[in-house]
Image 1 (cartoon, rainbow over the protein chains, first blue to last red):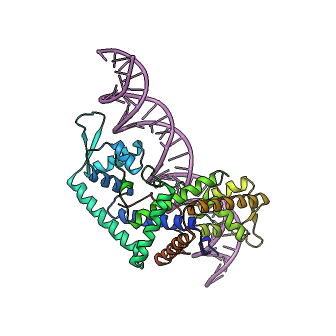
Image 2: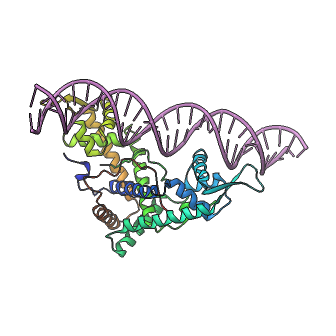
Image 3: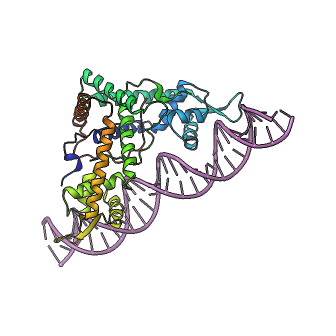
Length: 162
Length: 162
DNA sequence: GTAAATAATTAGCTATAGAAATCATTCGTA
DNA sequence: TACGAATGATTTCTATAGCTAATTATTTAC
């Protein structure tokens, strides 16, 4: 019973998709232990970085449409991790703030991210890790997957050529 | 309006997820020009490699559960790209074969995969490309994302730590 | 010859995403 | 200052994609 993945894939596209999907999935699994979805974790991070921002701004930062933000923030708020407060000068805006519980949850998430990071670097020399990061960063620059774009929201499909 | 992606991410996890998702998405976009979904393309490839196989076997090869296979093959068959034939000795099995049209479609898909590959390698020296592929392959080995596992089907979410 | 396993299929459920419509509010500008 | 355009949050609707479980037919094991 042959598998597509049995071929020695020298294909960059295949490897990147395969490895990237794996990394994303592992991280989501890990985050699930504290009942956090990756988008929720991202929201906590962004709110922590600058609080008092509108949902819209945060959605832009993490690449989620405003309509998605509602449900994400709803749950975070229900769990007492963030607060929606009225914006002092613009009554349309729901400014988001971390609660103390939110800050604690974020800290736990970051610990998990570090563990994840360690797992991914497992068996890799520091030099190789650095090389890999460098190459990936160059790739990001070259392909223009930088700030303005948010390429990592959902795959249309876990596609791996070849 | 700061973006999560504005930080200089030295995080391997973030980079891998980001880049992998980008690669997968781009490839899906390209394939869409010939109205093929990545799983369909994978099926064509596997059927081409060994024809007469059961849907189940092919599903294993590409990491799709049997129930998913039905719809995938349904469409390929409706479009005249593959044929379901009775297996000579096992009447439970629907053996799959490429039609001439299927072979032509596969060729077009492979051309697209090559273009995709070229795009990803754009601006990268041959040496860097080789280095990157080598590092990713080592990663795959080390993390055990090889044959038996099929990690790249669907992300629970496009997760990117940090 | 009966029970367990296997192949294909169907049905039901969940999660995600995105588009569009709605409502309130603010901003630009004449 | 009034009016139209733009913006923020929300709701609703649609589509997709995947999984699990149940179903049916057939084969294999004992």
